[in-house]
Image 1 (cartoon, rainbow, N blue to C red):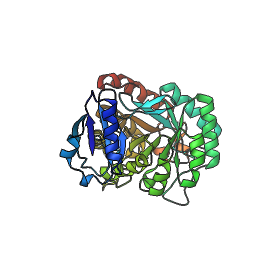
Image 2 (cartoon, rainbow, N blue to C red):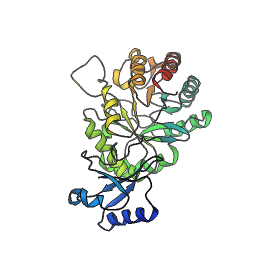
Image 3 (spheres, one colour):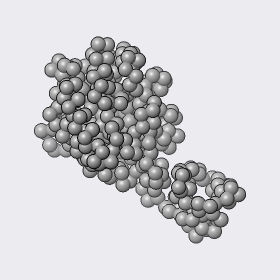
Image 4 (cartoon, helix red, strand yellow):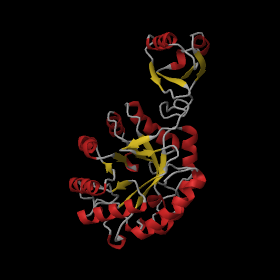
Amino acid sequence: MIIRAKQNITESELKNLKEYFTSKNFQLIDASSENVKVFGIIGDTSKLIEQDIYTIPGVEAVTRIQAPYKKASKEFHPEPTIVDVNGVKIGGDNFVVIAGPCSVESKEQIISIAEEVKKSGAKILRGGAFKPRTSPYAFQGLEAEGLDLLLEAKKATGLPIITEIMSEDMIDRYVKDVDIIQVGARNMQNFHLLKALGKTKKPILLKRGLSATIEEWLMAAEYILAGGNPNVILCERGIRTFEKYTRNTLDISAVLAVKELSHLPVIIDPSHSGGRWAMVPGLSKASLAVGADGLIVEVHNDPEHALCDGAQSLKPKKFDEMMGVLKQIAPIVGKKI
């Protein structure tokens, strides 16, 4: 349930409003902005009668939230959420590009790519340390060494880093060293992991599951938000359909759906969506045009010999060319790169 208070509500009326709900064992969440005073009521609100609430001095409007996700709902939080990652703001009119290799392979590789993507305008460095792979025989990443190398690349370039977490036992290390913790598609409904991440304040990039509906995706975000962590970024990375030509099918409409339903920022992964490097620039332009808040793109200096996903990785020169085009489009659609 959403309570909108009158703009001129007094401190005494505000205190009385809060006490009314806390005395009935409801949780009151302040989601107010500069221009509107809004409070979310968490709990079994089926027993509350709207007419009774209107009798409380200072109440202007009462709205029941129909969606099962409360804190992720736009009704609960009308203003768009902007997630601050070491000064890089994701959401609002910003279009943030995250770039780097699928997997960290060596110190020289990750630092070289980090320098290249930064020069082209990327604001955050991606790189896989622990890699969940379909086959147990495929390259699984450098693991802890990969994290160490990402930190060296961060030190060399100043770029914040994002990498995927695999399990709860890694959280302490990730909270200490990683700027954005990525939850991969396979872990979108790992609810124990999501609950644990909800207890941190670290920005979380939550990728959509391979066959997840938008509601399931937002419900997964709700687990993190309900734990007390407001810093959630959604990532559409393509869903599984009957089509085999592309690696996945990019659901470009998911951006518009999320913008209608939720206040959370949403970015797109054009690399995993298409699975082919030649598709990445086109999918990236479409992502910017449709209103996404950013991209996470795979870039590799030698994709022919990459240990993971070389076929979908742009070379630094191609990435630079793509960024040049995106910078021309961004002002037209009201975005800043």
